[in-house]
Amino acid sequence: MTIGDVLGEQPGAEGRTTSGLARIREMSDRITRERGGHLHAVDDEPDREQVRAEVSALQARTSSQGWEKLLASWPYEDYSTASLDALDPRHQHVARIRAWAEDPNGRTLLLSGATGVGKTHVAFALLRHFAEQGRTVKAWKEKSYLDALLPDGGPEPAWKVRDGAARVQDLLVDDLGANRDLERGAATEFVQRELCDLFSPRLGRGKRLIITTNLGPAELERLYDERIISRISQQITVVQITGPDRRTRAGW
Image (spheres, rainbow, N blue to C red):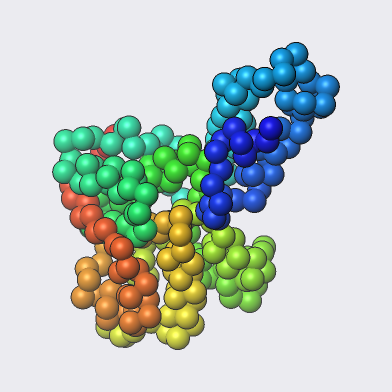
């Protein structure tokens, strides 16, 4: 009996990361060794529930590590307390955000609104939700991502930055267009090309893209060409976040 038999894995589940599966298989091998060569050394018929519980415990540890790694890689605000359960259901947008998170066909979520209303807080609450499901998550500010691709832009080579963003299952691009001068017109070809390449893998099965921006549709179309607009518009859900500036008050 294999872990695949227990979990009921289906062919084509390419959304699951190799590293996650490797850890689960390592757990299976360790359980096998500890039990003398097979999953259950006492009973001929394996205890499926016990194996499921052991695998679930491993997945929980893996997801916790993914969330902690995300927080450690984010050098800006502290979103360690962000969660979907903590969002105030009295806000009209919360129900739509939950519906998108629970929709297996959800692909792109655009969170728009004024500066400080909590767009990134909501985005991190979603990333935590997905991390707790065992999915891989990553967050970049648009400017930081593009800066990391420049020569001497960071500790990792550009190819590794691109590869990491392409492979992750759930990606947040924060503050899209926030550092662009609308008076100067469209973004440079470098920006257009890199963002197009960043967004394209999100169209694949099982991958999600979360974008936050304080720009409206017309402003985004002024900055970015058809390649980018068409990619982020496919299966998109747009949610307007309203409210006072969260940075001037405590809590959510």
